[in-house]
Length: 214
Image 1 (spheres, rainbow, N blue to C red):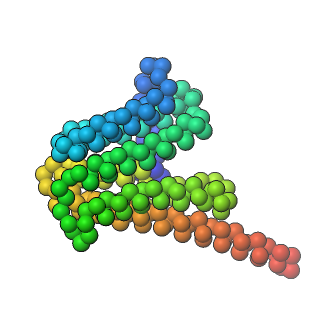
Image 2 (tube, rainbow, N blue to C red):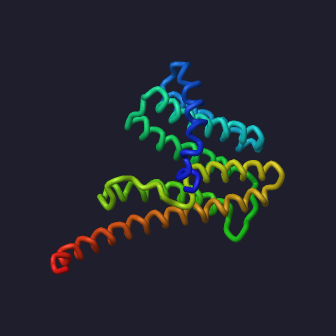
Image 3 (spheres, rainbow, N blue to C red):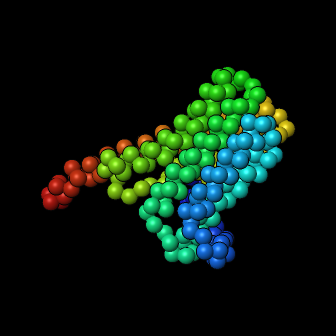
């Protein structure tokens, strides 16, 4: 999650966008819903192999996903329900787009294209679930957002894959393969971080009683 960790660099832009869209008196959840609707339009154009239009609507969906959080912070309407719905909508948007990829005449590279698309979706879901499960099972107290490949990077690579598909489906397939590898690598990385963090805490607890002798 290289981009997520450098969020402060985008804060001024986020503030400007948040203040502008908050003037329309629309709730952040409204923009969250619109992102899913726009993704459905992108899906329609994908299955009809109109990739340029699919790209436009996917970018608009991603923009609405950015706007909802910016508006929530600018209007001081940040809520747990809103954050929850935002996370759920992110998975829906990615799932809808990857589902649309199944209808494209993608070439076989090593594995069937359907398998690569499934792996890309699985990695995306597991990246989010690894974080949520670690907190649910009380391995960690606070959510961690570390990782090499987060939501922002996935959106960029999904966008790139659609653009490449406009020119050549072989190039698009390679982008999907990279997405499959990196999303699953990110999920494995989060699982590793959660486990090692618990081991470090347990190690400190065991060592701490010995401190009285030093």
